[in-house]
Image (tube, rainbow, N blue to C red; front, side, top):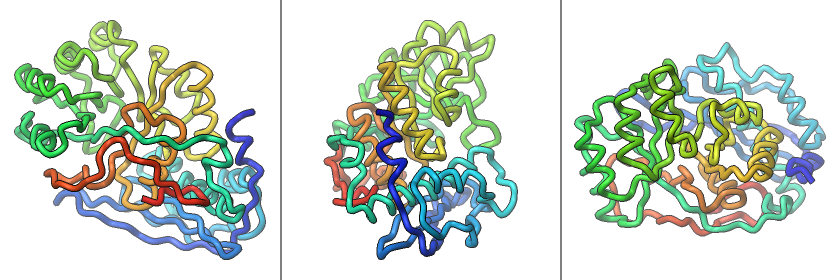
Length: 346
């Protein structure tokens, strides 16, 4: 049975919905803004988080025609026909991010109204979640920034964002820590603060010095293809992946792929991707998007059910801090599922 079939006929009653703005000052240049979506009905509440990156595109409309009786699939079809932005969003991907907020809230509400959990409905046993912490080294880049975390959390694993100012000495120093599971080349981003143009020397440097690390989101050009091709089995993708068709379109058949629920927009497309990966022995891993609310728990929940043992970029929020502090939950995270709904109780 297709995974989506397990949830598509769940019924839900929506009486109202509300929106709540969440903010976190990451740096003087960047304040992260997300919107909490609350769907209410039948004495229950379903929650989702809109992770649209551009603060100017928040909030969603507060007058969408969502009330009434639905099945999860008919509700999803309704959402697909609605305009979820008050003006054209600055980033195309934002349309999927916002839709996922309303879809995940509906999934949570439908499950809570049914008195069941997602794990129960899809018949999956939750397992402890292995995670990495994702970091971009601040200037001047130094492996000491990693070692300070390892001094407190010796078993911590990292996903790092290489930039063109990385030297051979720095990469060798990072490799010597033995703690780098993946590198995100950010080659699929345009017009963002994390853009990293294709840099053949950088690509050669990290692929050769970190031979066991996954290589995420390179920009494949005439100059970089010869460098990347010998490492094709280690190359994974994130930013371009919004559907099964996108997985099929990548330059080399992937052994692993970054599945971020909000990139897929709908529960159907997300669950189709899980089915596709399972059928082809592709090992997905989860990714975060600076969630400030329940969205972080959603990606940890899904990792617990569908890919608990891969290098999931779903670390608890404390790992986003510039400097380490003791007492954070360590990998693997024990499952913390609410008895009903789609919620990570921890």
